[in-house]
Length: 421
Image (tube, rainbow, N blue to C red; front, side, top):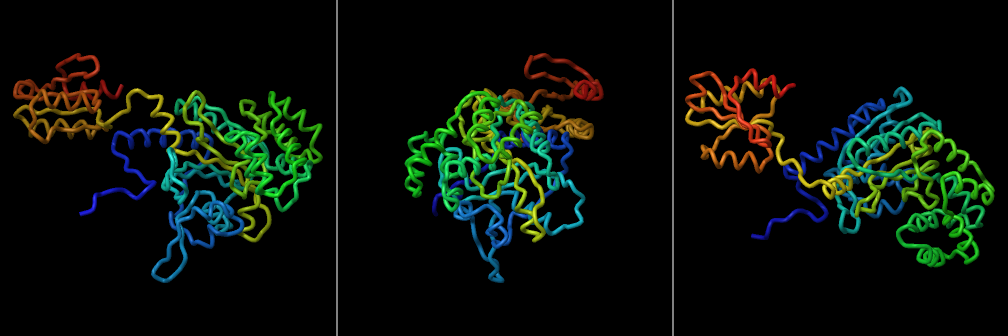
């Protein structure tokens, strides 16, 4: 028999890791709902023509799309993000009250190259607002992102740019219109690869040296947010993107204006942003999004419909957290019940604790007392309740607090009250 293995680029999550994942998901959910977003869900399977639409993610993402056919020979695909399915939902439901504010958490799939931190199945946690054209809405999403990072204890920064600024840079540098989209993809790599590599890549795309030199000089401008905007105002012909950037930063002053930030997907039309963990070995973004005003309207065939959102990469966030945490919780159990020759009575105590909403486990293996305490210690269970003939006779329970080693004899009701305090 062949050795068992998972599909490449996928993972199993045992309780220790799943507990941490759920904890982060629940924290994000609280922040999303605090900002007035409601949950929604879409299928993992989509029609291929929806995901391959010219209004969706573009050619680059389609190269990584998992395709399949059903028994009716219909072309389907696994979703590569949660944004295109959202656009389909809004287009199919014209009676939705605007603005439509939703969040969704779910797995997405991309058949891309495998490397450290990159998977073929991964989880995105998305927040989007449909029907709000105000630049203030972009700022709210940025502030939500910063609050989310604080809540999950990650020191992070949010970098922000505007596709209109990038388009204006292309126009001012006289980059041919048919090469601007691919040039933007090259610019997005500048921080990772450096100026010389990006220049060479732009030359290979058939762009002349002078426009490349000008473009690379402009996107390399340093300084504060205000200084960068001031310098670009002297250079750019079309200043609409800069005006929008000023407004965003007036409501989200903790964001960082990053001129090279482009975001790879073709559907962005205005503000774009990415979140990065600071003081971490993980340099890839842990959240990213922006404004995409054309996609939904094109799906509906009804012109522009404003939309803005961000996607949190749960897997990368967890990599950051695991790197900074010394201990990770192994069990959700709060109380371990250890029966000594009185299993029926211990069973009743366990049920009473569960009815009070306390996560409780009882020894089913008839292990020795020492082995049960070892188990509770390894699993990080805070309390062990010991119940033997003497405790049953006195209608009491013996409780050991594992962290301090403190023991006390009490009643089940008093113990429940203590935990609930």
